[in-house]
Image (cartoon, rainbow, N blue to C red):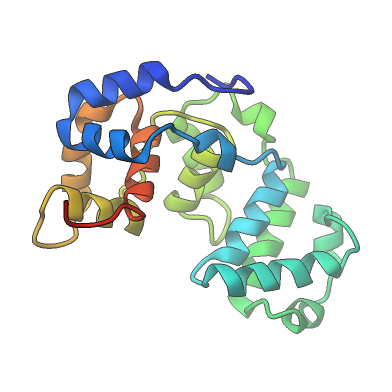
Length: 210
């Protein structure tokens, strides 16, 4: 499933057969383009970016990320980051808590945090358990790595606001669904819940009121 150009056709057939509401979304959104938003960066770079983007608008986070990279003229190594003063990192707009997270990440990578290649044989939960030992990396961040960097097809980020909002709207719920409700509604989507999540994210772009 990690081919350069994934074939989502079997996944889409299964999802449409298992859930008529999701089938309508798939028909309206069209071809799955999840692969076009999946990155090729190494784990350290991907996680530094994820940490910097937490709890910020995309525009603000992108500006801070750009200034962060400019500190190094190129991509920093874990050693580069550990050797950067907190003052310099604060100077490009990084909060104190995120400096702590970034340096914890850099230290854990230096100490032997598994690479993406070493994580690959592990199942999703084992990867999540490994990544969430890093300060500031929670389950959601680890799941985004699974979906967008490791190309895992059966990840359902139950804490994701976009997924929950999409389910609330499409399934006519009175309130945002809790984790148990997301899991229950998403059960028929196995083993393609990452692809289903992508369609939930895209459903926000669809015009309401048919």
